[in-house]
Image 1 (cartoon, rainbow, N blue to C red):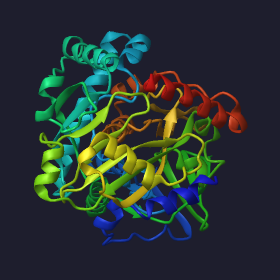
Image 2: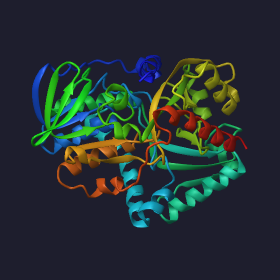
Image 3: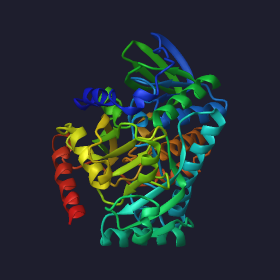
Length: 440
């Protein structure tokens, strides 16, 4: 996949990589035959959490990562750990009914609580801060946000604080927004530090972690499944979890082609300003929360523990990196915060996330491997907290209780139309339509 090298190059210039030096490396899986109870492919939040949860249940776990721990979206995202899904919960309710939609919604709240718990349990220094602020850029968007807040309070038992325009300066110092809603349960963090902390915790528990171990083949084998790496190592496992998201298709196209057709790589881009004076950073977002608007093609931002403005929002649906990412992102940042005019980006980076057609997460099993192979994908840019929940649900299922996993597995997913040749231009056209709607 041509986007993989682009992804690696973009990620090298991230604020996270500069402020979370890798102090530990794990060896590749050595050539030869190996065995375990569960093999996990992908050392992002989902794979790491699954490995920890499985090990806590007494299972022998091997974790295979094609690059480095946290090298994908888990290590360079916006750091916003938010309840909910990328799609509207009403879509889940329409498909599964109100009772199961309520279960899904409650599990997304659990996902955020679990992140806090793991940070405490494993002593992970990742700059966690409470609070998330959703904001609206127009009266129409404000009405939609208010309806969502009412729905969450009345149908899903999750109240938030509604903020009128006159009160917004107490929360955010931007002229761009007309209303907002604050959630105390969500929060934000340094994602790469969190990923590396999870990896150290997994290693200390006895999970066998292997970086630089690219899986090239998967096959049914007697009472389980055998994975083969490009370094001539084989790993036999009773169960396998594919948690590489969009990178599975890039690293090993033959691994699970049916899954690759149901997700698309979408480029996302972020800049970080130079360090500001503490009082200046505090004045930008007095409430200290992570912020995002409710446009379809949204902007998201937050201040960091070392007083920088970290701002994301430009996306590419063509897998091509836009020209002058830093310049265009700084322009968006100063549109939101005119008081930052003249402040340049010290770091600019990006990478790819996977989106599903419905923007709902895609969890399930592969029947062709006797239902011994599980997969997690389609987080659609909303996976910071949800990936950890997904890993937990897979561990429950492998350990014998698939009740909660199967609520998600019942969601219907379809391949993007047009196949590999036409799905990208079709998506570009579709997103241009939604950008126009946001502007109007």
